[in-house]
Length: 237
Image (cartoon, rainbow, N blue to C red; front, side):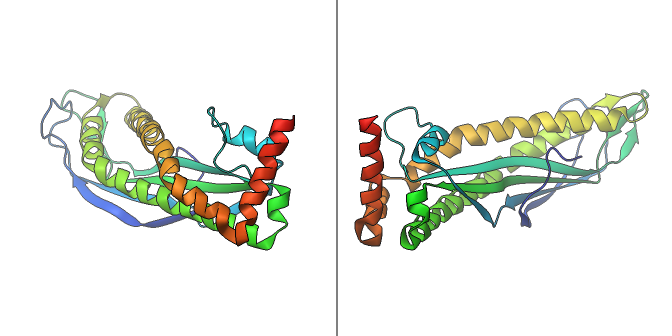
């Protein structure tokens, strides 16, 4: 069952491994057959471009402290995770069933990309292309962080799947529903962890003082001139 509608491109599997239940911890359904876990990274290749006023951009960025790094541009990425299961029920000696899926496919990553450009930036080709290139830098850094996060947490995810597979349920469809609900909770927690640990840190790296200074010098300094005019307009309000 999917946690979200799938967007973008699913890349090749970053992790395929076997998960065997019944190793460590009490299992309500002992000696469950092996399951295959596949983890893939979602990637949105297309960025949707919008026009927004500098005031709207400032609200979208909502930095909360000082100036926004891009008064001419706001970047909005949607990150999500979903899964697909091939269910397999195994009867418990004490009654009921456990769900030990034959295959668990988990997809994690960027499902949509949006960039909002101020009108004065969108109408000048060099400025527009430079800002779109900078958005692409953000996207590459975010994709790399997703890949690293998946590698870092794959063993933890496999252990949690073992625990889920060993839980018994009674009634038609109860085991499948219980497994899906529990997996949803696990993935929601991992998604929150990624957003908390990675997103803000990545913005600081890609929008470092050095890189922002270089960006403002682009197009013969035109980006810096436009940003200065936006900031001056804010001071006059």
